[in-house]
Length: 581
Image (tube, rainbow, N blue to C red; front, top):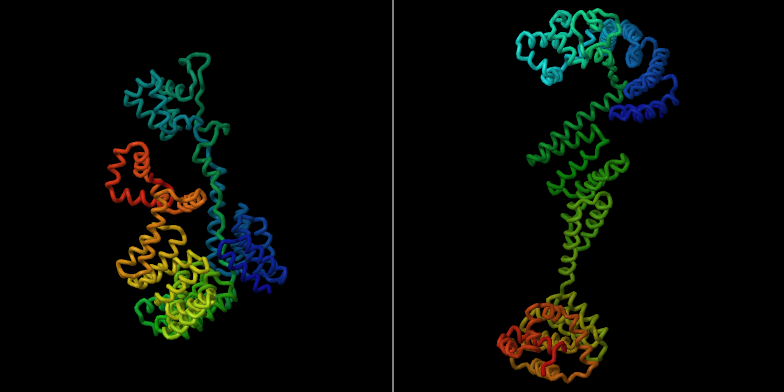
């Protein structure tokens, strides 16, 4: 259990999650409180979070448990260095080097500690610079001198400019130019202080460079003081031989995978399989090797081997709690193999189920497309398997018998079965449309009649069925068009001719306004639901035409010469929207 917690801590440390690493190392210490490696590793994790007090405590415990282990002194030195205890850090590193003289980590830590100690000593011993150094720093000096009327004239004198440049580079040289009144005037401008001429009671004394320590340190000195000592870099976790061997195997497995990918791209499938198999043997914690080999088997047409690898990848992936996308990839690959093996519609069921499982893991567009394709292929194949014109004719005849007996629901059932056996038979659609008409299911009957005409435009029964349904729906203008279209294919068909006559009678009746108020209201309400009537009424041109028919007889006369306009007017008349007097 302690080893498991230690391994989790090492993994967390490697990924940069130091808080998690501390948590796992603490669990391991509770299980194995005398294991010096655990304290060492936790010390490194604390140091990585800059918690050097805790790191120092663990480092001391490490040295106490294992005084002859050089790594403990490395942890101890790093903790002292982080706390700026440079001499203690130097002492710890030196003790570690006595145990292991060739340890590069200890040598590097000692060098860092010595360097930090020397930097701190220099910072404390740095002499104070000129107190007026800041006044001469940066471009602001020249801006102030240019803005002042007096010093602006001095800037035209080369020797003054040279003197100011020297003072700007080294403020301590100010004392060399104190007798120059121009420099004094410049200093007064820069410090915003008025100086009197020499001999006055209020002369300002310019202190020497070695004036006592009331002067503030210069900017470089401040930066040197503020610069922190180098923080120790955490060393790699202590790993066992077993962990080291596992890491090496994982690296070799990745190389084998890369070689397998290269062979796959070259279509060298046998070589690719060898590399992926070797990778699987080296590292069983990565299912991508299995799914890659499955892909090779799929390309080779070895579908059963592909399916076995996919099942293995899913099972192992669930054990490892692998990424759900990897699980979905394995399932999708399995589904593809099952589709390739399908020979009948029933074979597609397993593939469809597998694709559906893959989508529950990860909704991938490619998987969704494969699922839709499989469902369509299954449906098409079912129709082909069920297709039997002879049985279709038998079912249609049974439907005819029930129709004669006025058992229309039973007739519909047999006509439907006939269409399943032969979906290209227009007679079955025509007969079922007649049944729907008797049952008052006009929309269904109209749909069947239109399908009948689509399958055989010369079959007059399709037109008589459609026209009759439209007539019953009181769409007389549409019914008239249907009957007239049928007469183009069968000019002497009596049913079609009778249909035309009945439609003309109803249209003329509407034109004469012979509908009862109830009939007119019903027709108008029905017409207003017709998209064609709605389009006519919403057309600005037709609205103007209707106004002209009411108010402008001359314009109305011109409109009657336009066949398209009159056709639309006739539709409105037939629908009961417009009445002609």
